[in-house]
Length: 489
Image 1 (spheres, rainbow, N blue to C red):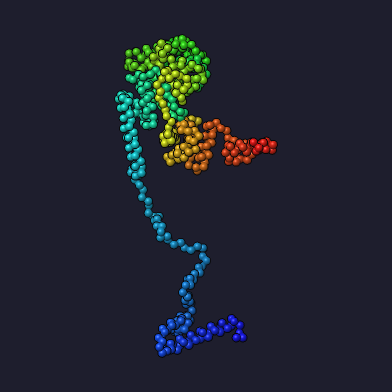
Image 2 (image 1 turned 60 degrees about the horizontal axis):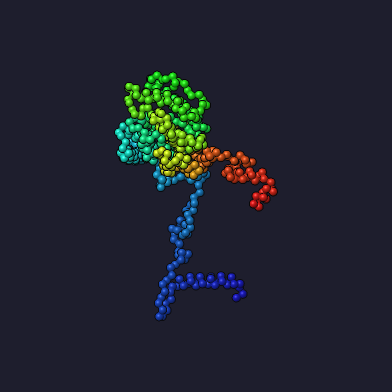
């Protein structure tokens, strides 16, 4: 009791262990009426040590046995030139034998994917041919005209089949079919392909024509004088090609700057040209085609005619009726609006060929086809374009032009094609990141819309949009009083 509690606990533990050793040595004591308990298993410390174990422990260099659960002891490695453990072969990744040569595919046999693409393209072309033939049968196109119309239909696709056949209906084929009307209007939004399709149709069908841009004239007299001069040049070129002598009256050009306002003066200037063209058509050996003496006059940007003169549209529409040789003329008005919206009466409005805007899928397909063809061509200034791969051109059309340019310019093929060609001329844009492509396309869209780059107004070159740059520059030049006035407003 005089011992401290810790010593008392130690003495009690020693007594209990001594009693347990005595009980194990004596064995269980049998008591009357009580079943004997099973003997306890001897512990490792109380079992006698064998001689072999003593010999093993005494032998030098024998590793000591660790208790259960002890991690294995790491062996020390020698410091050699190789400071890392030797690499073991990875069973999951099979090693390639460097001595074995890879099997080269036979170049004569195309890949399966390429074969599938070609088969799909052939099936699509065959389906389009069937559709084109059905449309030609529905319009009643003769076999002589099909040879000239089918290349045009393949070039512009099913999206413009109705427009090409409409031009064939009203303008004829240049050989046996005469124009159905003396005046025709072609209208549609900007960038829908009006000018390009009309030009390719007239050239593909072999129709004699001349082209006037109404946006380049300031008066009706100037336009009519230019019409007479272009008609004279056309007749002189036709007589030279046919090896026919040109009359003296056609060898003198109209003086520059001259205006033909009066109708009788216009009649006097145009009569020799149209008369000589009619005589060439009636000459022996010319073939006697009913359309050989006709000329198609295309008036592009006809929406500018009301700016030239209030009665310019009515005067031009009446030319085939009032001129003595007017039956040899066919007028085509190409504009963004119908002529009825420009001041022409509905009773006087000629038959029209309407061009609907392209859809997003049609615009992307046309952009890919045109840019793929022009990728290897040279720029007008002599600078060669970067030759991109098919995937890069498709990325430019789908992710670049349709995502970053079309929301601002619409489906205007003229503007989108110019922007695509400018991007192809930049080596840094092809194969670059999407952020670089977006920056280049947005900069070209901004230039196309005529908006200046306002980032130069900043003191430090920062990457800010135009609105932020303009507001930052304006706030920098404002006084405190002006800033207070802005805040109060």
